Length: 172
Image (cartoon, rainbow, N blue to C red; front, side, top):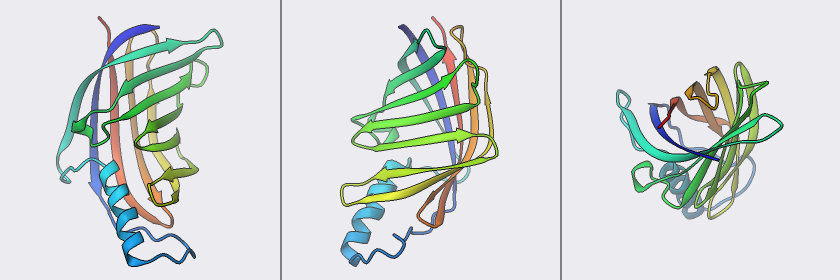
């Protein structure tokens, strides 16, 4: 286990259309609660603003070549009480899982030009989540590096955000 620092830059492009929950019948109040949960998990950013965050993290490298970067979200990200992990292997660094546990729970699998599905858990009910990764480059090793991903998130059948995420490992 190695203690590191991360510089995380996130730029979200607005494309938010209220998600629908497929054929599930829900009341307007339940829909508002779900939408509030989704919106609270997404940083509030304007279309032309990038959010930059510096945070302490831990890098674990397992004998099988798996690298895990783990950090605690803060009030600044809107996900206080959540632990985020970025997981990949040395053999396939461009297949990355972003896993969140705590107040926000989800797992996003990012792989360039691929689409992966999962579940986003809200206080009311789980929502289907699909991530489409448009581009992904990961040069992170035990010595540092950068992860750069551009992806779209879709809740149900509606694309809600497009995000450019850059994670730089700062050693020392």
